[in-house]
Image (cartoon, rainbow, N blue to C red; front, top):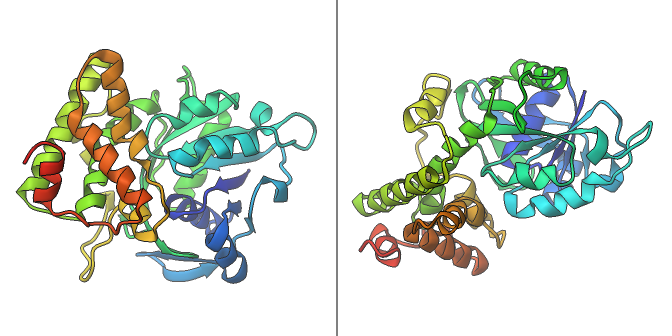
Length: 334
């Protein structure tokens, strides 16, 4: 199989880079400065086992530069706010031998949140989900660091919607990812794990606004955001992995070592640090706001976090621009 990685940022670049160096065919799809850096210099990937190396992974700027074949797997690794545009661009692309990508090719959503699979099923007949536990940083064009050990990440896979039995394509993808240095278990219901990850991802917005770490005020905001999420998900009847299950997925498997110097935050923190102008809070905290409104459960802290994160992205504020006390006051917990 050949892997077409749509979105060569921290997650897509790490997955694509590790698949490439383990001998699999990969094309990284990027845009702007990231595309130019990858085309001109290759992918600089840093991991604990092999250090820093430059990988000559083939790169494309869009679907018009990729001739699709029947054995291709599309890996969607853009942020959720960019998903719809990516689906529109790729779904109707022709595949050698007849048909379109949406009709014939598997689409694997390697993304945070729970909305991507729903969006994808509108345009793709074969949708796969991935619960991504893969801390990685992408702050400079062409350069990605994935610091975890002994495995680069935990990538739980499953069909969307669930099937009674995994097909050969999903099994093969899992085997390829294991060969590339990941843990890649196959789950009967991958969305169970993605909803569990979604609850933990609510804190990435807090981190983006206040920076990594923080005092009691930050912890108070995070506790209430998570408590709201559980009330909302219970009202919606949505099963999800609990905190202990999520922690067990990481412990002793995907460990991020402490590094002296400036701390680098998660994906939302990095969006603000790069000044992208957008952030995925609408599909993290905003998912709780949506479900809360549908089921009559207020989620004011998540609603405030969503609003603050969007304002920070729109106004190109640096990450960590608020103190914990300022954030607590802004969400009504001061």
